[in-house]
Length: 221
Image (cartoon, rainbow, N blue to C red):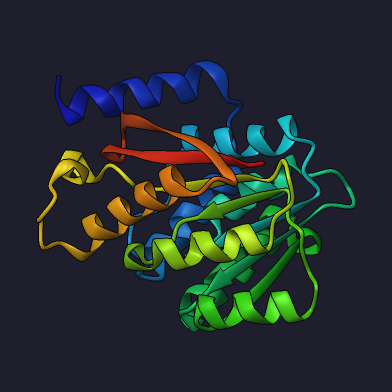
């Protein structure tokens, strides 16, 4: 199997199961035009996030890592009318592009975008008593995975769903001494989820337009 096949299957999934979506296409085009890295979730992964929001009946979602807001929009679309996504982004340029994308997609009223280092923003959310959140999506700098997971538990309740993206790293997650900070962050996520009594989790390997990777998913007990 090849990346070309994986991408073709992803395209088939989208063409078979999704309606055409000019707004989301425009979001990705805007991200490219503004020089953002092409590391958004795929459409199929975005739809999964939206379905997880709906399946869990989530009203309050926390996203760590906004980029251009593509995944944010997917989750916002899954929320009820009174739902809200709080999304955290370090880079002011990325945040500016994301705000424009939220307006373009018609979800600005459902999104609270915070700019700055995520660990600082998470501490502010805690001081504000903004939680607990119903679903938390972690997709930021990978070396901080254990810190983000620790904050996710603090800002959660029993039943909160936590999704941590990019934890397989082309299979390199099995390398104990890889020397790659991103791989070490992925392994730290596994160690924390596996060792934390409050979390019941698993991980899924994925292939597709984004290559070979995967995500961990856990529920807070």
